[in-house]
Image 1 (cartoon, helix red, strand yellow):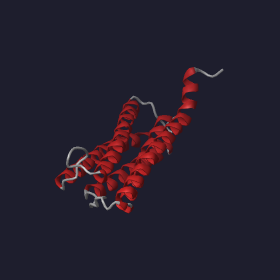
Image 2: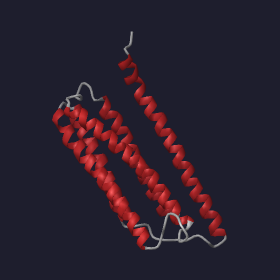
Image 3: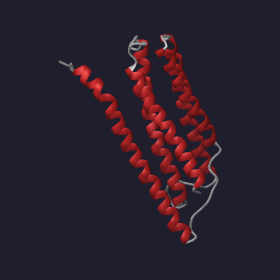
Image 4: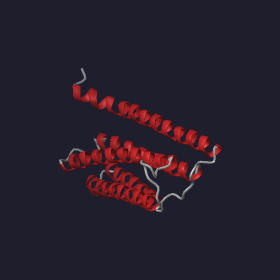
Length: 192
């Protein structure tokens, strides 16, 4: 008979995928709302066009590097080099913080160009961009929390080449938020 811990472990990945599916639907709704709002305002010649902040490029590079670090660390762990996962989790974590820092820089750049999220000076085009990257940033923050938990467990000797289930789960989520950012960046770049 399966223990409660084994049942939880077996259910973790399907539940993660259900959560990812929910996030995908939420972002599909947000990007659809952006398209509808843009289409309506373009017809009325009221859509404001502005360049995306330069910081978005840097944050894109950083988040790609974070995924590559996590991939490399997990491969080393699977290959039996258990000590490699901790430094790569640190690199991924620090790059995750750098991503959020660059996103904050993008926010500052938008405000310096008089593009605001809300208020009398706001415009739907800017508000949509803020809404998308705030919502994504919250998901990255969730990934950072998960990375911290996994890093703590790695220091407690929880993962090895024989058992790296937690690393697999955090990797799936982290790569998902990375791909989600790439989608958003391409989407916002293409539909201005």
